[in-house]
Image 1: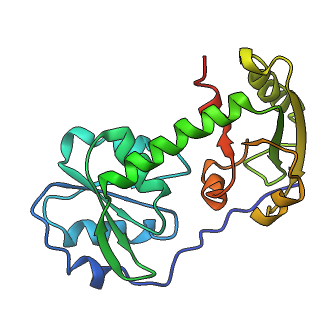
Image 2: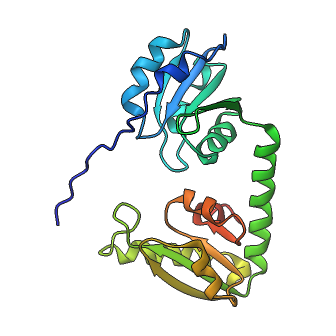
Length: 218
């Protein structure tokens, strides 16, 4: 089946909000797909700014490539997932411009520390869990049905963790997952997300850890 990708840009004009920003630092400009078409205009409106480009999922390569050219970063978009990843990857301060709420703020160091503490806590929860649910999406780009071998490799990667040799692994296949659906399986001690890493943000009150974080366990 052929796939057609259509750019879905936001109709929100970000420029009037950008013109209110008064920062003398060299800013690295980063955004999501919804606002990428406005990045050139934003660059012209902010003196000494450097275009980083688009950030996708937990991948902050575009921030890293201009790290040495800027003092801090300006993230144009919603949510804290991308800004926190940018801050952790570059070890630089990140400003947030939310076009939807029309708010401008600076990512707090306490927010970054809380995020890191939560990751440590989830790893401990994962290692002590007896029953583990593996979340697998059927969405194109996040899981390819024909590549079963890739999925099996993911499961084998989890099993390689010494503490998991005698643990139960259960697969849960979904397209769009409602966070409340996990409550139907109270016997699952911890969930492993193999879909978009940002999905974990929808389950802040649940024990959900990303596969990439498990791969760092020894």
